[in-house]
Length: 289
Image (cartoon, rainbow, N blue to C red; front, side):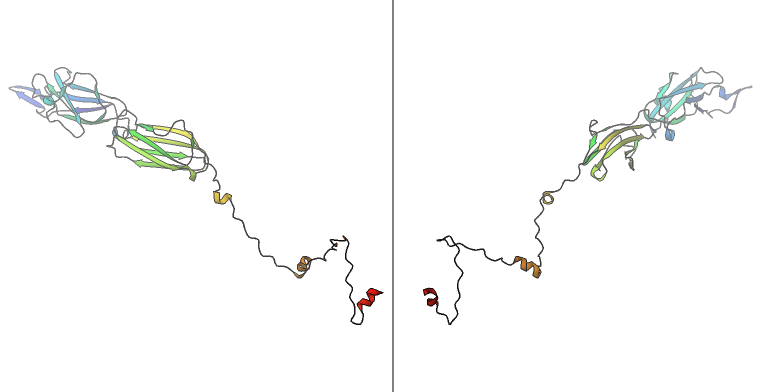
C-alpha cells in the first residue's frame, strides 16, 4: 500500500492566546491517502483500485470533512471544497482511464483550518484488448493468396504483432500503434505459394499501455497444387528429321533389281528371247530352213 500525507502551514507550530500557548496543529487536519501499488507497467493499475482517505486532528479522527475531485488527466481543481465531492468514508474506486485526483480535509468548526491539497495521478485499465479476425475459423486449409485481417479495440491500445511459424523458420510482423487510438485494423497479405506445403501456426497478440495482453493462435495447413503443364507444353510441335547422308553402299542397296519375267497376255507364256543376227546372215534363210 502507498500512503500520501498532506499538512498545512496556515499556523505556526505554536499559537499564543494571552498567557496560554497551544499547538496550532490541533486545529489543522492531517490528510492521508491509502491505495495499492500499481501492478501494471509504467505505473498503471491492471486491477480495480480502491482509494481510502483519512483525516485526523491531533489524534482524533473525528471533526474533519474530506472533499475530493476526479478530473481527466492534466485537469486540476483549485478549490476542491467548493467544486469537489464530500468523501463518505468508504472505498473510493477510481474508474477506468487516466485521472487526476485532488483532495483536501477541512475542520468542521472552522473552514480556515484545512489541510494542504493532496494530488495524485491514477491510470487504470483492467480490461484486456479485444480483437477479432476476418478469416473463417473452420478454414484450416490455405492455398494461393490469402488475407489475414484483424480488428482491435481498447481504450489504450499500444501495439500488436502477427507471427507465422513452421518447422523450419519463423516470420514475425509487428507495428506500433498510437496509444490514443481506440480502434485499429490490420491486414497481412500472405502469398502461400511462396511457402512449402505443410502445417503452420498463426499467432496474433495485442497489448495495451497497462500491459494487458490478448492472444490467439490457429493451426492451419498450406496445400497448393503442383503446377500443371500449359496447353502449349502438352501439345509438342512436330520436329523435322535431320538430313541423312548416304554412302555408296547405301546407294547400291537402293538400286532397282532385275525386272521379273512378264507373260504374254495372249498366250500366257513368256515370249522367246529376241534373236540377234549378224550382218552377213540372211534372216529369211533361217526362217525357211
